[in-house]
Every structure is written in structure tokens, then in C-alpha cells.
Image 1 (cartoon, rainbow over the protein chains, first blue to last red):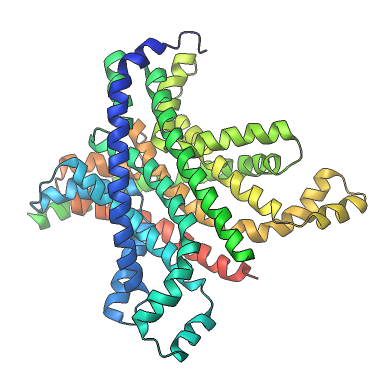
Image 2: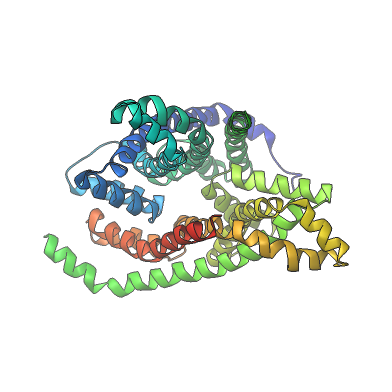
Length: 222
Length: 217
């Protein structure tokens, strides 16, 4: 089965794969940063008492969560040019990842905020703090601990989702596998190498997520 | 021009319904297979047999650590090299079953391990065999923990069926992709695709939310 697995080709293509890995890494870091900002804004609107902010953000979150990422990517990829917006594929891809993960992050943060006991909020009001002070000094510091493990989980999802950008010909890790397959016709070597690199990222992020989870449980017990 | 394309789109609407039917077919069959396989693997994962536990663990990490597209490429391009030629449709089902079962396995294992040891001991001292303990005592209680995330996972899996379009299965996303070549209105075409996906996933999301509230202690 693996007797004719050709490591020399992998070695030959290694710089190429590392280039792809770098692209995947950069795309993921930029997207997760932007998604975090989007998520925070969407969540702030979602929990706001103002209807004009609340309902659009609900619509955004629910639409994103109930349609596939691939459809969102194609929507932007084929849709933006018809609106006269021409940007490189990689920017379209990052935009799609940002919108997609932003909706999930908004829900993660909201769950974190809701996990803070009502009494905390009430004592904040009783202490005469205003809305922003309550958020800044009471709710968010407590919510942060609860949100970090699922946020890292979302980061794992985002790294894997970035593989879909290969379908709009962004030169990232999976695309490298496709290119190597078409050049040498060695799909096994190509895609197992790609899978290997994704696993490395996965295990690093998973270890971080588990570590933060342990820290969190320790804090709760304390 | 918009109105013209819109009427063209309405003309080929049955084509989209066919895609929706294909998506539903893939989703239904693969969800069934995933659930079955996921429960079996989940029971092994939370069981006492260390070797099986580790094996399932490796399987789960491999599946969860790699993107679904890469898994599809592995199944569709590499299996033929090893002498197993699959058509696009069965390959898609196989990929979905492998991917979904790993995620459901973790949910089931989490549910089973949430049951206190005393329940196992009580079931064992009532003279139940291991299968009976699971079937009559542990799983029914674990279902409360398993069900809400399971329905949530179903939504994710249904959305993931869109990825099998890359190997040419004529499902909803593929239909959109083919149509956009003829009707160059990306926003319109993929809005329609999105609406059709929404009509399947959103009710399930609501069900998941409802179950979460209902099962909360």
C-alpha cells in the first residue's frame, strides 16, 4: 500500500509546501483577527437594547450560521464582480472567512457574557457603575475566561475552513497539494503531506485549547 | 438585465430543486451512517478497552485535524491508486460518513462520560450485561447531554455536504456553480442557493436551541 510512497518527491516539493503553509498561516491569523473584531461588534449589537442594531445583527448571525461557508465564498467570489468590485481572490477569501467566523464568535462571546451571573450585573448597577463601566470592569473580565477555549476551537475550525479557499484558486496549503497532483500525478504524496501540515497546526491549537480549559476549571474550583 | 436574468433563473429553478433533492439525499444517508458509526465509536472511546480507545482516538484526531476538502481528495484520488475505484456519489457518502462519525463519536463519548460511575455500578449489580447496562441505563440518561449538540452537529454536517461539490456530485452548490457560468449574476444565483440551504438548516438550528433549553437542568 505504502511501498511506493515517494518521499523524494515530497522532499523536492517541500519548499513549495512550506510556502503554502506560510500562506495558510497568514490567512488564518489575519482572518481570525478580523473575525474577532467582527464578532465583538456583532455581539455588542446583538445584546444591545436598540432594535435598529439588534435585528440586523440577528439576521447576519442566523444567515451565516445556516448557510455553508462554500456558498458564502462563491457568493462573494462570483457576486462582488457583478457589483463592480474587483479584488484579488485572497482578499475575497479572507473577507468570507471573516464574515463566517465573525458570526460564530459573536455567539461564543454572547454565551460567555450570559454565563456571568445576574447578581454580578445587579451589584454593578447597585455600585452606581454605568453600562460601559459594568461591561469593562465586571462582565467582560469574567466572560473572557469562559470564551477563550471555544474561541481557540473556532480558530481550529477557521484554519480548516481556509482550505476551501483553494477552490477559488488562492495559493494556500491545499492548493499546493492540488498543484502537485496535477504536475506529478502523485495524489497520495501530495495530500498526505498537506494533511500532515494541517495536523501539526491542529495539535498546537488543540494543546493550547486544552491548556486554557484546564486553567479555566482551576479558576472555577478556586 | 437583472429582470432578464431573474426570469432565466426562474426557468431553470427545477434544476435547483434537483440539486436540493441530491443534497437532502446525501445528507439523509450520511447522517444516518454517521450517527450509527458515531455511537459505536463513541461507546468504544468511553469504554475500558485501552487499545480500542487509543485507536478510535487516533481516528478522531486525524479526521478532526484535517480539512474536509483534503479528506475528500484523499478518498477520491488516493483510493483508486490502492485499487478501490469509487464513483463520485459513493465517495461523497464515504467521506461524509468518516468525517461525521468522528465528530459524533466525541459528542457521544462526552455524553457517556458525564454519567456518574454509580450508575454503571448499580446497573452491574442488578445483573445486567454490559450491552444491557449501556442500552437500558447509560445511553437513555446520556441522551439528555448528547441530543442538543448532536442536532447542532447535524446542521454542520448538512452544510458540509456543500464541499462534496468539488468532486462533481450534482448537489445544490454544484448546481449554483454550474448555473453561474450561464447566468453571470453571482449574487442572485448564490442567494437562491443560500435560501435553499437556509430552508433546511434553520429549522434544525431552532430545534437545537429548543432542545438545549429543554434539556438544561
